[in-house]
Amino acid sequence: MTREERLQWWNEARFGMFIHWGLYASLAGEWKGEKIRGIGEWIMYKAKIPIPEYESLAKGFNPVTFDAEAWAEVARQAGMKYVVITAKHHDGFCMFDSSSNPYNIVKQTPFKRDPMKELAAACNKRGIKMCFYYSQAQDWHAPGGAGHWDEIGPLGTHRSYTRPPEDFQKYLDAVVKPNLTELLTNYGPIGLIWFDTPVAITPEQSRSLCDLVHHHQPACLVSGRVGHDVGDYGSLGDNVHPVGKVKGAWETPATLNDTWGFKADDHNWKSLDCLLELLVNCASKGVNYLLNVGPTAEGVIPQPSVELLKQIGAWLERNGEAVYGTVASPFLVDPGWGRVTCKGETLYLLIKQWPAGELKLYGLRNKVRSARVIGVPEAKVGMRQEGDLLALSLPVKAPEKLFSVVAVTVDGVPEAEQLIIQDGAAALYLPLVLGEIEGKVTVSQERGTERWKDMGNRASWRIRINTPGEYEVVVVTRANKNHPEWFGNHDVQVSIDGAHVTGTVGVRDLVPSPDDGAIFQCPRSRVGRIRIDNAGDHTLRVQAVRMDPTAERGLTLVAIELTLATEKT
Ligand code: GLC
Image 1: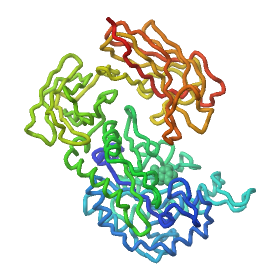
Image 2: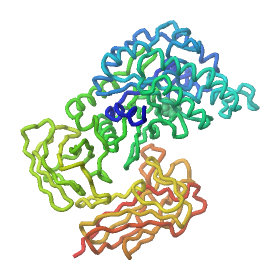
Image 3: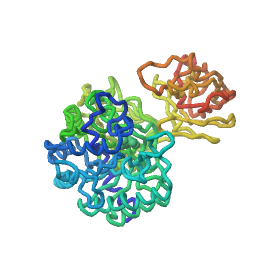
Image 4: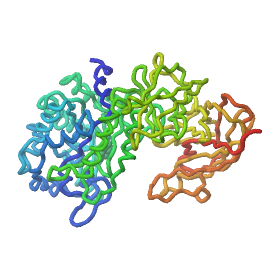
């Protein structure tokens, strides 16, 4: 079976449920009266809990209110098409019955049931794909696992991530492979195995895990975090949302609050508004959204999670055709009013800011045939197509409070101009991930650039200007508030055609950053004004003309922003 065949259901699905559930839930973020910072499932590590003490949590783990039917129903109502649950997390405890690994829920807890069996049945009944998370490398409990307590370390008790390679191989053979075989043979068809944190693993070892999965279940997908790019699809970082096109199959694992595993005092729930935006944004980049719940030790999914998921599901119930089975938007950048997805000859416009006048879409190459407002079949949509502009006259009132959808059918497969087009008075935003890079620079969806240390490096963007005039140029960089070495004092030159402007960027005390508690901040440095004399297509280039050698990360460029200051008269 080919990777493409395996990915078929997954590409259709677009939205899944992540479940982090294990012994850590019974601590709920607290150890011996002390609140432990960080994500809940890491408490064994963070609070330095010795193995025997952590093991004894199993004696009190009795989730009698666990109801697989209820969990699967929450997923179904949310419109989630697959469920990925932690069969074994980094704490090494198996949440399934295992004859190869006695450290498991059936053998060690008064509960004695196998929740994975029950959940698999409940998911199957609803046509939801059952999938397992399995921590293949980090195991703080099994000897040989990465991060295992090293009792004889020179500093006393500490975790060792540099296992002797032969110990790690022994752990893979004695624990991981038998466990995986059980998961792949005792629970019916499995949609995917979600491996994680591939520390200390070699390319051969990652490949051998892929082979084992595909040997038992040729249709079962392997997540990218198996390591060394040998999985069936890629995993963006935790809560990392794509800002530009991504090539290939990707997924974003994301939280509803700040933790994955249950923490009693984490009430930092995202709003429905924010969650829908993240879901829609993922879909517009062809990325799957894997959204997490962290049930309690009693087996209950926290009520705020259930409520939020229900509301997402209600929106999907009405507008799901714009998400399921769609592919990424053909446009290089998102329109200011929302996002775009695509299916066959239809473009779905997911509109957050319903227009007062016409809705404008720039850069579509196809001829438009028809347009309809989802949920308002009787609505008439006026259409005007001139050059690269499509303008739609929509009903005055938006059918949805958050994202309303207009489906536009075109001749052929939708195609768009691959440049950044000026949209009215809105600023032109040029993210580095959409630029052409010359030189040695690391670019990432989440971070912009790092290691831009060479004055020979260049980035450039193709832009289409509709209004000639003087433009204000702002350079956005990225910094870690707690690390002065992330800032810097660099001079950057921005040029368009013959004109250029130079300014200093990223200096810590010069650029006001919002103090919103976030560790990462994106200071915006104004570098000056630049003239663009003619409407039409231009190339904007940026380079460093002086670099601060003390800035450890080099120039951490995220984007350039152009705002029209005065129109040419
Ligand atoms: C991380 C964490 C882990 C969590 C996962 C979810 O890599 O180590 O605790 O399960 O992300 O994506």
